[in-house]
Image (tube, rainbow, N blue to C red; front, top):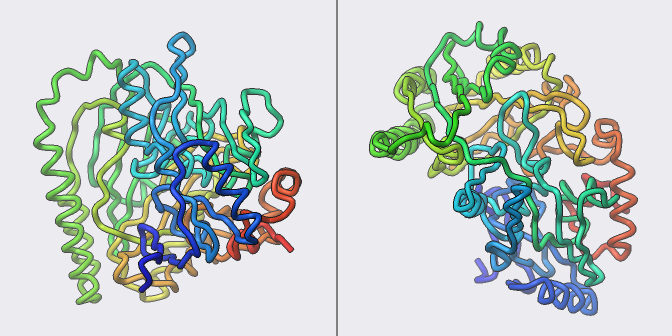
Length: 435
């Protein structure tokens, strides 16, 4: 393997670029783009490489953005912070906390860069909250022509640029509208699956943040309910050692073991999953919001996720569960089910125009079952499912256009900002229908 070979976190995509550049300023990004254009090389930006798709794959120039990190500005009065596009979610959360601020909502992984997270539509769970991109009130974008654009609220380009798939330019800075820092009271427990699924919409409406994990082959759901509380009610973190044991030893250590056992002995997977569901369940704790929203993910995996109308989620989940049972596949990784509010802030948001339920399927990275992902795609697509932009799927522009009302408006912006196709690759060509 060449020393220039690039591989993503999930080990689902790799390429050997002609050159890797690591700019540390918008001006350096502009120079890199102009040079690549002059040389006839394509460019793809990449952050922490947490997308499972081929979004960053290139045999041209791979532009790593992690040097574009750190605090740029803070507006205490309006509760806004501006950070470099290469700043990780974890680092942004720490920066915000220094000023008594917090993300409104987060997903469960914080290794991604802020530009990569918003660019692929990353989201958390909560019926009153949109994806991370809905918190974006400004962006700095370096276009393929080397122009530096500062997009503020009301800019007609912002709805396209929030979730842009790296197709419009390189995001070098992001301004987020935060909320005052708050805590979360977390409750996690194992429950019978059927009533959790049937009452999913009610559970979402009745809690600030609700989700569940289903362990295939079992009738169990691991439910997670987070209630927002004032920051001053968090108190001393006496339970941190217990949470460390739960997260690192139990959740990650035991989970790695169960994945390996399941790979070695597939017939044991249902029994292993039943044990795993009860092993990681039943705990309550209070902590700052960003510490509860996110969890360490040491076990590598591949993932596909589908966004369906919230009211159809129970039916979609049961159809998927039945199809998986008929397939005979033994899957050791749990299925994650979440929900978000409708989001009209970004044209390519997976929750654009509708309250949304999400069904995410995963495989251990050493045992990726492409058939499993195909089952999820076939079943959930039939429920007007939209694939997560950063996770595995085989949809193309002809299909995606029917699912996004502003799809062609996004393409018009892309043609305006990148008329020469500098930022193209084969994956973008497929999902955007580029000629």
